[in-house]
Image 1 (cartoon, rainbow, N blue to C red):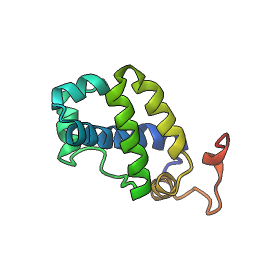
Image 2: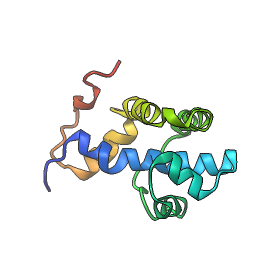
Image 3: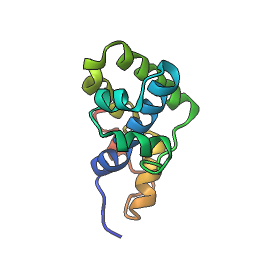
Image 4: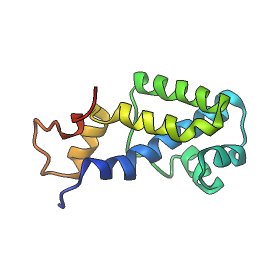
Amino acid sequence: MKKIMPQEIEVWHLIPALRRELAKFLIKDYGLTQKKVSLILGISEAAVSQYLKSKRAKEIQFSKKELEEIKLASKNIFEKPDSLIEILFDLSLCFRGSKTVCKLHRAKDSHVPKKCEVCMKGVA
């Protein structure tokens, strides 16, 4: 098994999983179409469809508390779509070092030490 950087987990798994949940909330809570969500999130309509059908970004399952944070972010994105990059960046920082992300990192890389705190560097 190869060594995987925490940033790779963020790029390959966390950010897509965040987009998945944002898409779900924007459609369910605000009645947006898949097309509108794809435009807001800067992804294809096919990606939105795959997120909704759990065909993409399914390796991370967020806790109830984490989903509440993402739901609040979806409200902010709905109210101010131009803030997407900042909000998505803030969410990724929020989840950096979380049990959810660390658990997946350990599953993907057997070299991660049991008491690893690399993801916590720079996290307040």
